[in-house]
Length: 189
Ligand code: FNR
Image (cartoon, rainbow, N blue to C red; front, top):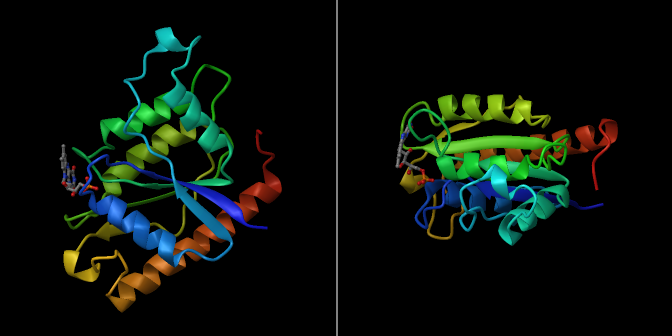
């Protein structure tokens, strides 16, 4: 059967290099993965006073996560952590207490930066956050992408063969990971 994958870009910038990477990954994904973006840019700042009356954007976020077989997070590193917009989305998704949409959900993490360590530190922070949210994470292969504009065409296809092969292998490994998690960990529906 096809698996639906919710793709969350940690950057809300229209010119985001991580969104470009996400589009390239979607194009390289195995056919069994049906990838669609889950947008996080319309969410208010999380406020626990609203736990009893979640705003529609946050309800939609949670439904999109629960309705996905797996989540793929493509995120920049901001100040050696994750962008506030992404943390905000995770906070909304994880609440109210006991109704955490991310629990048991298989998650893959990847990110791009112009810098040499390619979001490695930000991804470590994200893993700490998501382990508290009880999300099983793909630990290998890791993917810290140093973004080079010349390796991505206008249509976000990857022109550099070795980068393309790596990203394709990443998506194949993620496909395999999602299947394995779904086999052993019952999901909430
Ligand atoms: C950055 N950038 C950055 N890069 C990095 O490798 N490590 C870091 O800690 C930071 N910190 C940081 C903070 C803030 C507030 C901004 C705006 C940027 C640079 C960052 O990698 C670059 O702007 C990317 O283009 C951001 O990704 P998106 O938004 O283009 O996907």
